[in-house]
Length: 90
Image (cartoon, rainbow, N blue to C red; front, top):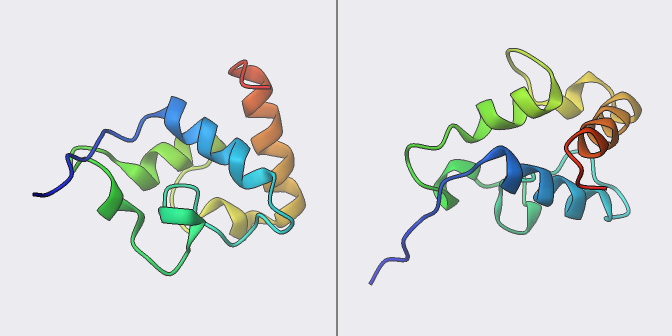
């Protein structure tokens, strides 16, 4: 029996970003992927109506690709902490 996939929301993304930031080297890893593995497709873990990459981009305040970490490690980590504070997660 297949596991029912849940919707990937900004709230879930924020919680996963917070967990990811506790890692020694958070950049280059995808918060939506299983165990933050950047080698797998993140959308395979969530409900098909979820816009996983879009949720991440909106959270990061970016538009278009590539992923947020490519905009600079320090800048993206700073942006993530500010957004987590803004959303009341920290």
